Amino acid sequence: MPELPEAEVVACQLRAALVGAQVTDCWVGRKDIVREGFSSLPWYIGSVLQQVDRYGKSVALRFVKKQAARYLVAELGMTGLLLFPSVPIKHPQHVHLRMTFTGGREAGLRYWNPRRFGRLSFLDQPGLDQYRARRFGYDPLAVSFGDFQRLMTSRRGRLKPLLMHQQSLAGIGNIYANEILFRAGLHSNVMACRLPSTRVERLYYVTQAVLRSAIACGGSSVKDFFAPDGTEGQFKQRHLVYGKEGQPCPNHCGRTIRRLQSERSAFFCPRCQDPRKWR
Image (cartoon, rainbow, N blue to C red; front, top):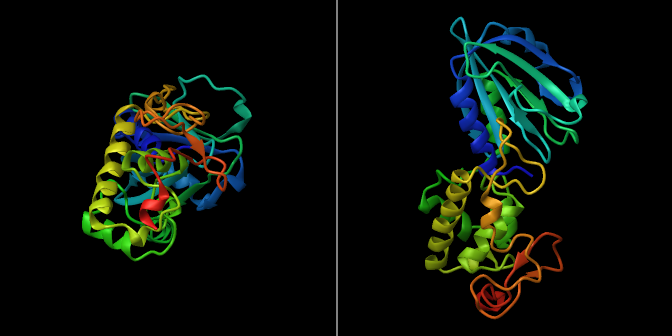
């Protein structure tokens, strides 16, 4: 499932290839793939892509036309991809959006999503503001340490669900939560509010380091993710615990990576992430 690093890779490639290009056509194949703004589709023809941003795991494209601005927000969901037309795809019936452009490095953009857990939204500025307010908390790469610390100390829940709660921290999913917690030496069941300030500080810097490293590697292509140009993310080669059940701990502590019984895809080292330290 694409998370923050994958969405950032998508946004970066769209900026490089399409910012400044003009929309010549916009087609949506299924009305139910659109959350909001389906009737505004004709407006986008003739508009110019001015900016591409990332909010959590979503990518937002800003278009301008006659001093007005509208947005296309693409939720990647579990299997959603934004792909340039030069990239071959299987099962083209799952392409739900096609935009064609003139004046860019690429001639178009497609939204491919076979399972349709993600959606598209066509929004004006107030609509985008409302969309962001109800869906996204702090961005893990932009949040200050003070805000991060207040978030941790004010919540009584378990640490991993808090890291993955999109209205608290927007963009971290299961893969990166596993990797962050292992590198920070923290168990997923630790109560966030019980962490000493030194551990909160380490978690803060580890979170940013893991996400930035993953972005630099093009994300993690575990199952379904491909960048718009069709390339796979290589950070999966640097995963230390995710999907490593039964393998030796990379810290050479003598234990093996285990899967947490209460969670299907939670991986940890019972020695390096001993939860009894923080009870």
